[in-house]
Image (tube, rainbow, N blue to C red; front, side):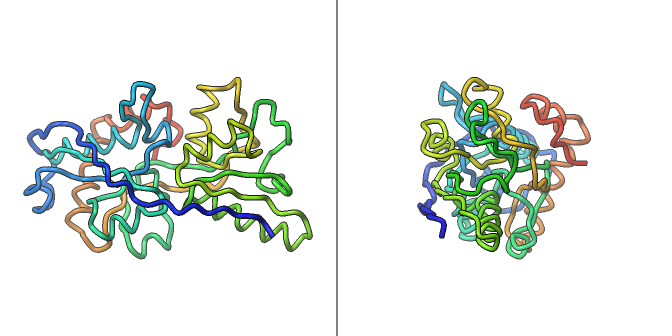
Length: 269
């Protein structure tokens, strides 16, 4: 049996206000217009999507896109920092108006939310410099230790891989599940685990920033559409987000933001 440490993450009731309202290009839902703001649930610590820089300034592609959508609706933007495992429940409990946190568009999620897809994402395995365990994919993780963020796709993929290892009579990968992605990465950096499972976007960011510490094990995998989630059936909210995003694509803002964060290859048409 694999030893899985699951630390449940709770929503962090910390809200950040960003930006100033402008004349709207997109008509927001009545409740958003009345409040004068749109609130996003997000987990930070996932560069280059949403993270704090060395000066503790919040930034990233998700932050820029969310801010631009608010601007086009003519409302302010707030961010409610929420553990990823609790992010959909927080939206459904109306703690925020939308999720903007590299949330993958999956059929089971579409049962409770609607998506406005804004990019593609893939999975990757970050390893120590030199790749000492010669990791090229999930099938190479038998008997190794891996760290992941709670509630993520890579966690599910490792669970599925462990089933394959068990059927083949091979040692399973020991998966340690952390409440935040940054905690999982730290476990790799201090040598507690052999592999940190994350998105390609985050792995590539740290390879660029700390190539003397990290390498990427193998090729990216499990490419998937990634979207802004709104509550299922709230057509007015979904349509406003979709219209704002489409206007960003039409005037070139979307491509400029992708280029700013080195994510041109993740563009969605």
